[in-house]
Length: 75
Image (tube, rainbow, N blue to C red):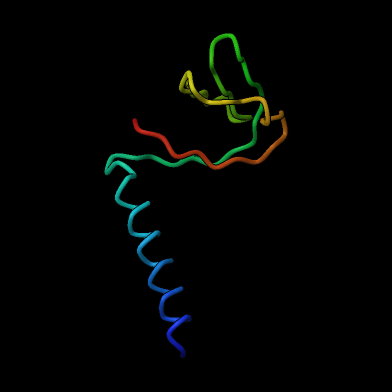
């Protein structure tokens, strides 16, 4: 392994560590399929009936009903 490979591995490892420390300890995760997006109320509803309030800064325009998604949120 040459010096460039070691540097690349170190950069990737430090990036993963930096990102993982920014995720709150109480973060929850959910998987599902989008059923509806209510932009006026900033609400996302999954097919199982679970709904989530989206942050005001979240751009939900790319989301479409039928998309499989993975959510990471603070309860």
